[in-house]
Length: 330
Image (cartoon, rainbow, N blue to C red; front, side, top):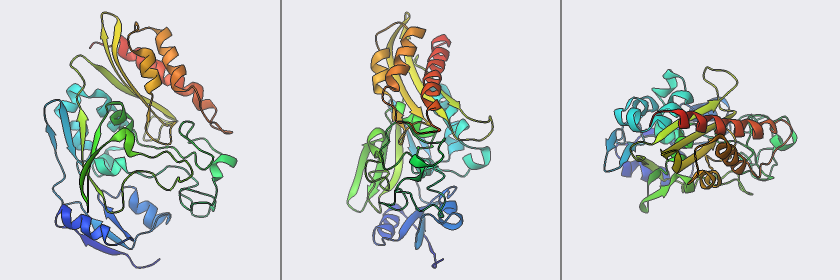
C-alpha cells in the first residue's frame, strides 16, 4: 500500500488546517474502526493521519438544561457520568450495549458519531458493487444475501444500516453537534447531521472535508421523564442491533404529555420516529397506543430477501420499550 504519514496536531486550529489543506488527510482519534478499514480491510484510503487524541476536546460539563460532551470523551467516561446515570438512562444503556468495556475505554464520542457502515459488502474490497465505497458501481446488498441491513431511509442505491447505538439515543434527545472548520464554527442538529443515501451513498454526513466535531450538546429531559434503550441482537454479548429503540416519555396521571422515539438497526441513519411521537402525545399510556405508534414508525419499509423480518421485530421492540417505561417509576 502507499506510504502513510502520521502527524500529531498541537491544537484544534492546526489540526483543521492540516486536514483541510490535504485532500488525502483524515483525523485519527480512538481509531477503533478507522484503522481496520484503512489497514486491514483497505476499503478507505488516506495518505496522512492527523492525530487529535491529545487535543483539549475531552470532558463533560453540565450547563443550564444541557450536558456538553467533548468529542474526545470516551464512551466509558460518558457512561460513568453522574448526570447521565441520573437523568439520561437511555444514553447510558445505549453506551453499555454498544461496545465491550475494552472498546468503550478507547472509542470516542466524536468517533462514534462518524463510525462507518457495518454492511458486509462495504467492508469487503473483493465485492465490486458498493455505491458507498465506489459510487456508481451498484449495491450488492439489494440483490445478494442481506440481513443486517436497513429497511427505513433506503434507496435503490444503498440499504446499508447505521450501526451506532449511542446515536439512536442522541437522536431521540435532539442532540446538537458542534463543528469547527476552516471557515469557522457551526452547530447542527444531530437529526440533520446525517444524509440519506439517495443517489450518493458515499456522502454520509454534511461535514465538509477538514471539518472536525468538537463537542455534542445533549439536552436534559424534564425531571420525571422515563427513558430507556432496548437492543435486540443475535447474542447477549457484544453484537450489533437487529433492531433497537430509544424512548423517553413523560406520563402525567396516565396521559402521555411528551414522547420521544428513535430507532436503530433499521435505518440508513439514526432514525427519529416523529410520526410515532405524534401518535403517542396526548393519549393514555396503553398497549393500544404503543401498537399504533409502532405501526406509524414502520409505515413504509423497504425490504429485500432477508430483511422482511425486521418490520415485525422493530414493531415489537417499540411496544416493549414503551411498555417497560410505562410500568417504570418516574
